[in-house]
Image (cartoon, rainbow, N blue to C red):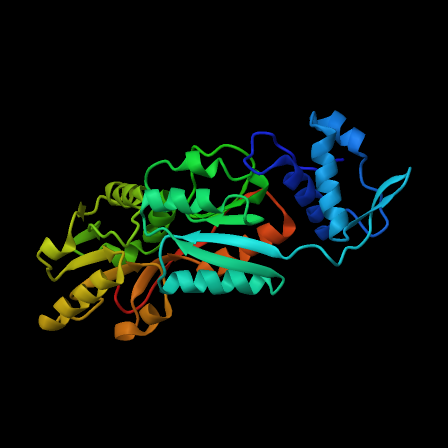
Length: 336
């Protein structure tokens, strides 16, 4: 009975939760061919649900060959090879180079036994909510990237805990036992910059660009971590609202998010014959193959997106409901 995950508050119908619990138990080796499953009466007594609900779940499983009914004896596992393929809903913010790394890692480690469908919300909360609501009950796992600086827990609570995996960013107000692999944005940026203090300190000023961009998520935690770093190491630094309206100067170090701002800085450096890493410094967010080779190498602060994809896949395959903070570091290259 311990393998059943049934919650009357979830939007997923109870009979589907019963079916999912048995299928998951087969996947995990808890139930094997020939094993007897709990009786309809015992499930009703344990969870306070009607016999008709359990009977519907068992009849559905009998119809596809997973269960067999033996008159007067109950229900048994008839076939473990007919367990349905994992059908996974993935909701990203948008596509970009590091998201491709994450996706390719995830699909590699989840394996060919799963079907993965990807959707994008483009930082539009209405679209985010709509995509989740429209797809409730259609998938047996939901991988959600909630890239918003405000609370979006209300719609996420409609997804059963045992089918939810939060990726890249925590949702502090989301309650319950669900899987999560994320970044600790404030602590990550602070620790990464601290590890490179000897390269950062020589610059006259450190500029964190928080430019408005509807296609780029800038976590509030990263801004707070930067401000803590500047304050504790007594450096001359500030957060600016728009790099395109800032006078780019030699002797300054710039921390930027989107690739278009990185290219903007490189073009300004070329126009002024400034050498990256000495006349002007650049640290970009989120590593990618392009940043590794561009202008001899762009320094980055980045989480390990390949590791994130692997951990996400392992959490789903194992059924663990745990939280992991993904590795984050400063990668030193020519631009710093």
